[in-house]
Length: 172
Image (cartoon, rainbow, N blue to C red):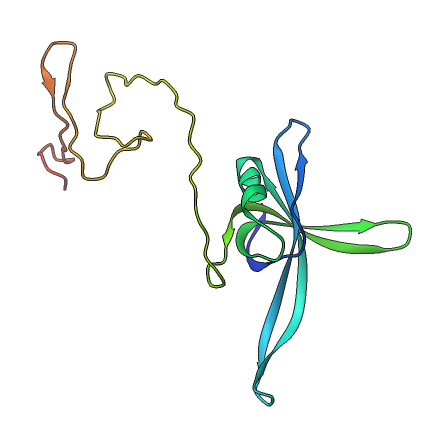
């Protein structure tokens, strides 16, 4: 079991590129998450307590983070919280670490430009049991596109049909 957490905060330094023993990319950085309160007596916002988290982003997501994120930027992330105790010669303490599942810029404070990374094209031939449909350039089915009929081994045309549990044709 793990604790899932969503944080909104500022990156406190440049991202550090690391790698696992297997060569997988890791982006590592610290995130400051502070609270702001409205001081009604003075009529202004004041800073409250700030928590700091060690953040690790693995794999392709980590590589994308290294390319996209910079010191001082505000991000939203979700991931798994790991609390660990540490000790050295002079101190001991507790650290809050986050292993990120998803991350992006907080668009309340600025704009961002998304660039999709191309997927490697795999040569996959459809089986006789897989209906073919209209697809886009990435191979995903296009919503609302008509499904093409495919000839069966007996030379006849197969049309997909929806059949109810009672045996009648129809979606419900």
